Image 1 (tube, helix red, strand yellow):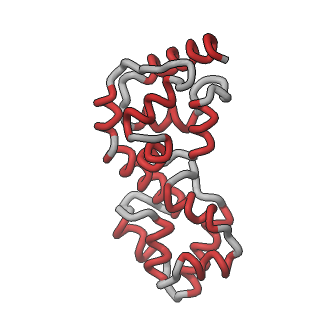
Image 2 (cartoon, one colour):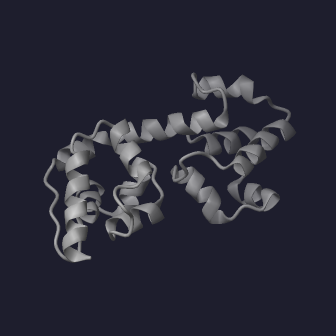
Length: 176
């Protein structure tokens, strides 16, 4: 399954650079959408993608069902795509188990991401999560596990979420 942003750009024959220039999007904004970092696609991005389809003389209803059978719009297609990416990587999480190593410098959240995928950035890509949110979480700057992280772990049926929450809270209490 292809990312819906990439799907529309390919469908319309539009390059990322041309799309960004035409709609005045930052490179980062489009890259975040392509990496799955948004919890939902920004309205402005959806509008621009739909306009690209329209300007190409195409209708989204004719193409969306072939790639995203149950999606009625681009945002639903994006959520379906994120789900497929996350479930493809779920085994890495379960292999990590329920023991979360840590030390004064590295929180259980940091070690969990490193042990599961090698780094925070790889974890972010595999689970379609915002890097900044993960950075704040691993440093103990958020109160509890961020909702997006909890939702992603729940979505892939990660069995040790509660333990990770508890160990991260204990680390914060002890080290910050």
